[in-house]
Length: 117
Image (tube, rainbow, N blue to C red; front, side):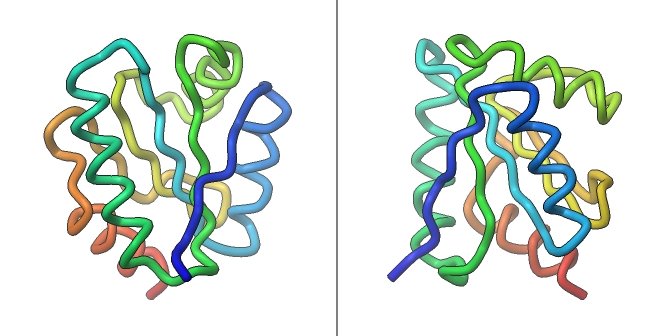
């Protein structure tokens, strides 16, 4: 069994992800279905899901169809939107973020491990 994506559709979903990070680590992957780099990053995120603890909380937001959720993340965190982009949250704050080709299964895994320590 591996970890799975949970969808973020609304600004309220984005706020809930930040709230949930008060009780554990939350990974948010911002994906564009029309971007070649996002397709590569999605492959890396799927590789991360296969190696992650099944209880790892991983969310995905489609930056086109769920744009308000993506905008809420940018507004709340102050981190400029990019896609693809990964944000790792712990205690309601971003502990790590990466975009484009910096998104690899091993990098996300290391960021999650760091957040757990």
